[in-house]
Length: 514
Image (cartoon, rainbow, N blue to C red; front, side):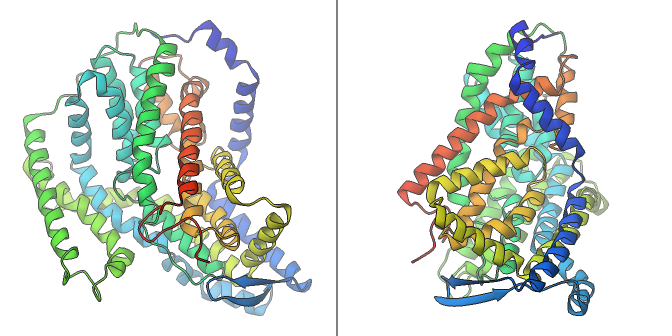
C-alpha cells in the first residue's frame, strides 16, 4: 500500500491542518441548507418589522432608468405581510426559475446516464489517449463531465484511478486529477450544462428582489468559462505531475481492475450516439442560423436563448442517450426510458425541498425591500471607503471560496449571497453577469478541500481501495495544491479579462453601460 511520508505526517500537525480541522468542526455544526433558509426567512421577518418601525429608507440612482428612487422597509409581521406569506407560498415555489430549468435538463441527462452513454464515453476518451497526454485528458474529462451534473463524481473519479494504474502510475494521483477537474473546475466547460441556467435563474430572482428590471441569459458567462476549461486543464495537469504524483511516490499496492474495457455493444452504441448527435446538431443549425430560421423571432435568437435553451440541453442528452441505449441493448422498451428519467428525478428530491424554502426567502427579501436597502447602503459604504473595482471583485471571490468550505451546495450559497451582492455590485457599476462569474470562481476552487462537500466522503472511500490509511486529512492535503493553483490562476485570468474589457458571454459585459 502507498504511504504518506514522515514529512507529510509532520505537516499534518501544523497550523494549517489545525485550521482545516477547525473548518471541519465548525462546518459539521452548521444546520442543513434548508434549515439555513428557514432561519434566514425568520430573520427577514423580524428585521423587516424593526426596520419598518424605524422608518428605514434609502434614496438611490437607478442607472437603468436614470431616475432617483426612494425605497422604504416593509414589514412582514403585520396583516398584509401575513397574507402575503400565506397566499404566495405556492406561487413563489412554482415560479422559482431555477426549479423548472434544472428539472427539464435532468430528464435528458438521466437518459444519457441511465443507458450508460456517459460512462462509456468517458472510458473511451481516456482509453484512446496517448500516455503523455493522459493526465491532461483525465483533468479535461473531469471538467467536461460536470455538464451532466454530478455524474463525474461517481464515474470519472474512480475511473481516473483505474486509468493511471493501467499506465503503471499511482492510482491516487489519477483520482486526484479527476477530482480536481470534476469538482475544482465545476464551473468551467466548453458546453452549457445544468449549472448555467440554475445559477442564472437565481441571479434573475435576485435582480427582481433588488427592484432591478433586468434579466440575464444562461449563456452570460460562456466565453469566460470556455477559456477557463483550458486553463483548469493546464493547471490541473501541472499540479498532478509536478506536485501530487512526486509526493505520493511509487505505488506498491496490488489492487488492479479490468473494468476499463469497452465492449463491442458499447462501442457500437457509442458510434451510433455520435452520429445521432451530429444529426441533431445539424438540425439545430438549420433551425437557428438561416435568416428566416424557425426558432428566430423577428430575426433574432434572444427568445430562444431565454426560453428554448434548456429544452435544447435536454434533447442534446436525450437523443444520443436513446440511440445509445437502443443499439447497446440497455434500452429494450419505453419503460426503460421512463425508468431512467424517473431515477434522475428521484435524485432531485432534496433539491426540490431546497428550492421551496430558497424561493420563500428570496421573495421575502423582495417584498420587504431589505435587499435594496442593504445593497444601496453597502454600495454607498464601499464607495465612501474607496473599496471598489478589482480589489472588491477579488475580495468577493475569496469570500465566496471561504463560505464554500461551510456550505457545499452552489445553488444554496448563491441563493443566500445573490440577493445581497447582485444589487450591491449593480449599484457599483458591475453587471450581474460579472458578479455571477466572480462567484463561480470562488465557489469552484475550494470544493476539493471542503469536507462538507456532498461527495467528499465518497471520494475518501474510493481512495481507500488503493490506500487503506487514506482519510479526510490525506485527501485535503492532496487536493490543496489544486485549490491554490486554481484560485490564483482563475483570478489572474479574470483580472486580465477585466483589464482588457472583454465580453464574458453573448451580450454580457463586465461594466454596466454609462
